[in-house]
Image (spheres, rainbow, N blue to C red):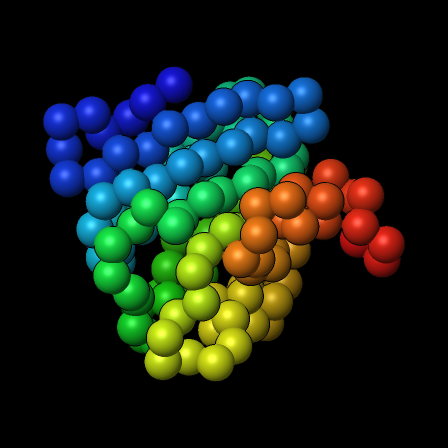
Length: 133
């Protein structure tokens, strides 16, 4: 499934047995990412998938600290109580932030979310094959 064809961003979904895969392309702005978070939450809920693998390496640019914080604290509420239990995001490391700031904010708000550079490692963690996952 593809959403956003012909617009500045595009979101594609692939429903797997244990999770849903979402891939994003386009500009990385707070408005775009907020919209995509809503679409991903709806797709996961509609497809009854509690685990989400999100590949954002196709997004252009970077979110600042405030925008990242606002997305987690204002947009992630859509995941609470809806059966979504775990999310892995695959991205490039932010050039100015040494750590995964987005992941830290998510953990502080009690979301089971981790950031990865490798899709394979992300998937291992997401479906629970990683030791301690």
